[in-house]
Image (cartoon, rainbow, N blue to C red; front, side, top):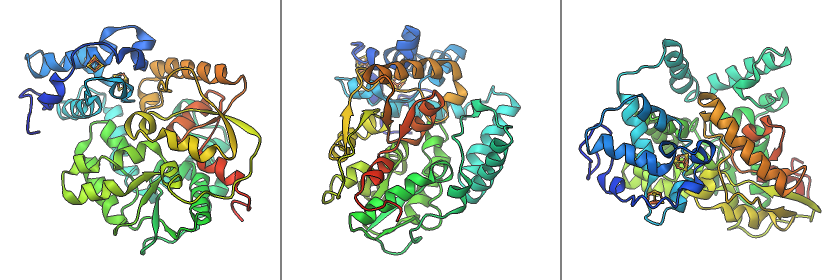
Length: 400
Ligand code: SF4
Ligand code: SF4
């Protein structure tokens, strides 16, 4: 329970809950409100529903659960809110309370979640084994597209990242779970750039398999805490922790709140988004490529870490950058949201793709989050990570 527990079944912080003055300024920034036009699918509507349940004793019914599950947890509302309502925390706590209630999900769904969250994500060797099976299934065209996996590469999977594990480096590169299995070349580019910046870099030791961000989104708070402890132990010392996944970085910067100890606060203070960290180093020797990129801000970089300006600063010496006109609206990826809410997710993505194509008819898009990259690539958009783009612009051979 929090210090100012609202006293109801959601265990929400009452101060955060009543901070909303129902002004509605967040509504245009909410992708589910924009897609549906329904008040209950807006941040204001969701907060009103939370208050009814938490303070006025309304039941947790299907309509309430649906409204909470349809939230992408993009936190666009939080960045737009003049009253500084901490919507992300309210939603994380609500999801945790819903998860603690007796489940109405099918056995198959609960089994799939148990396998994903409890078995595979925290065990990297198992995740890699599953990824090899998925690679094989892709080769024989037996993997349904709706599962959303990117095109997997055997070369990338069998080649470890060229950086030592553990030790006392000048900076850590956090490799994590899905990103290391599916987009490992981006880790290679990140290490190349960190070395080009003169940094002695290492990968996490035992336990650095998964930051718990996906677990937090799903309301699996206890599991997220356990994973956070393991991640903290995997990168001891004071060196900065460089994270090239916006969703993971946002979660790791919030370990202080999740765990509630001074050690966790100190750990969180060491976490840097890759572009944020690179922008604090001496400039790299980049060539001007003459290429143009459309910038897509991952929500967890823009609305949560508020570090989206760094992406522009580090890319500007090498690329011309074009902005979209949608004020950073979410793309609908949201962790496993695209799997759980396929229709809404597709509708939200269609709006984002339209905004990207208004910015440039056949865009090359830059995005600093693996979830957004994979989700937008599925819609046929050419999306790349800033680390890969910068490695390609390095005056030396990036993987030489
Ligand atoms: S969450 Fe903030 S912006 Fe949205 S209605 Fe409440 S006070 Fe207004
Ligand atoms: S987190 Fe995103 S989807 Fe959820 S209410 Fe806020 S703006 Fe809407």
